[in-house]
Image (cartoon, rainbow, N blue to C red; front, side, top):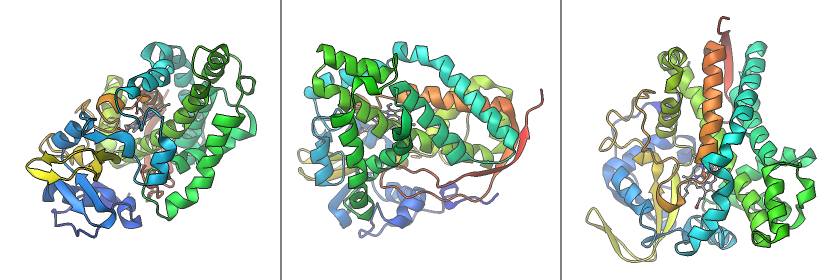
Length: 403
Ligand code: HEM
């Protein structure tokens, strides 16, 4: 198979200050640009969009861990979206953040997820078995998107035609976190439909009896949680939980096709599944940049960032920082890099990471059980301001496992 440039990096060269971190070129092939930024300096000021980019592992993690200096009130790279996000856990700083986060995370605790594990594993196995029987399939459409939509919709209890809209709604939500370019502007009406549905139209009885979504709306009806919280919770699960997980499942399929010896190692030792997924997350960061408002003048490695600036924390560059990870350009499923930054870090660290892991582990396990090998033809990214999914992943030469 042909490798895309994302997998092979050349020698670092200086980055033009006019670089647009959200241009089509960069979104299509981010890693070489991120590497150049990281090797150029711990902090790079990009005139285009007036961004202060923090590039290295220790500094990115420190910024994520310091919400007083790096405020989430500018988590998006455009003003309108930061306004829309006001009052959500994602965009709120301490002390208010804690309460919002507690409501949001209640249904995503390890205890709450335990009841979903068997069902998610059975779903992954049945789907992979069906795809293997077909002999070829699209790893994005038929596997990643189909599986994640089915898990999240069934969890929330969404029924009927509205399920078809979720993928477009989830994708639009991430485009909107970027700067106000054409991708963000055209996503406003689409993401607005999701907001309207979760916040104004959705009622407990629309959701399947016994589902988590129904329980959330019933809790609001009983007065156990604030009336506006129910819509907000469902909104954040859909907006935050779909595109990211879809991107990372696609990344796993492409990486295992490019590294058949790693897939073989996984087939031989299934206890490597958690470590393998952590390495997939480190190697290809599904959401490689997050925004923050710099609240005061601050020094990062002796370089001053003025208060009031927009910071861009480059998770994607940090995850391949040779100062932190040995041989970071090597994809090695035995590495177990549990300290990767793909789920963020600190108080805003991904609230849904338990669910994402459950989904990904189930899919990796099913692939390793049902497949001996497979190949993937050329792949391109589907452009999104924040996430890095592949457009399509043509999986061919599917070799079923014996027995
Ligand atoms: C592989 C899949 C996923 C990735 C890579 C991912 C990544 C992230 C990252 C980087 C953050 C931190 C953002 C920041 O610091 O500004 C975050 C936060 C969040 N994620 Fe995820 N996520 C994933 C799956 C999910 C799922 C499945 C859900 C829910 C069903 C979810 C819900 C959330 C929420 C609600 C927050 C905000 C938490 C807060 O601000 O307190 N995510 N995620």
